Length: 355
Image (cartoon, rainbow, N blue to C red; front, side, top):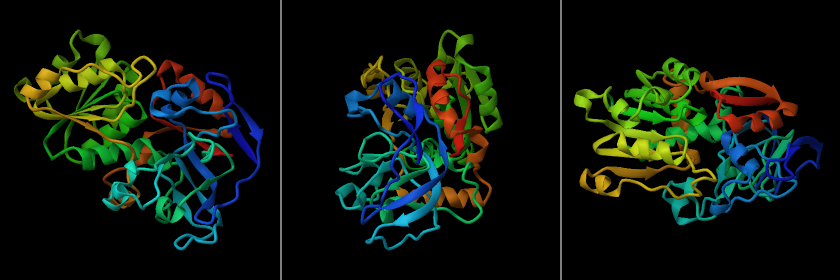
């Protein structure tokens, strides 16, 4: 079958012929109908994140935002059948550890990242395997367009879990989103659906316009201001700051700007992982965090059981992940789309839907 294959960091990837997967006893094989192309793929392709244990090896297949149909099931599978349409969270869990039993499977003690390790290849391929599929594969509602929900494996789901479950967003709150890429625009759309007043922050007018389309009440172009946190606070009552601030990018400057945009008692939601410049380390205004009782909250992916909340909100017209999809491309185009992310100009979520 055809797949996009990684060889070396920064080296142009190609579509190659590889063997078709076979299901493990507890797994399934899924025919890919759509797969989001994520900045995380770019990070891995560039060789980032070795400081958190992600070190792609030659022959790896990326792709961690897939939707598709089950084509084969293992002998031990109980809840899935050939023909079922499913989406897959990027952080695969085993369902048995203490965190899985607490409903926090996204931080499973034995989490396996889809498309980032050789023993769990990703979905930039005609087919891909899913381990522990009864636990990890999420059945889609009837009539859902696979392209519309391709971001549910990572970006949209990450933003939803963070805003709906990790911080306290209530109607009327002010929420700032720093970095309006795919996950940031998802956060804008979700915060708006939760009833918040949303401020989009970015350095690209095209992204800020998209943020407005998705529900941002105000925007801040960082190239037009000297003090980003002050500019954010100007939009809030009495200039107090926002109740929740989201760093959706992960660079040191946006992380600090996000924290400094908060009101007293506010919560910083850290969704973006850092780049090779930071290697996981960012200096923060600790004394301010302490004296103003601000919180710094991490959020990583989403446990499978929370997908039903997204599907319910989609059915009621509260959210529409498809609004964030920016373009659809063929498998042959995936390497170029990933390489183009060097310039941070990608707007929304590009999706591969031709395999």
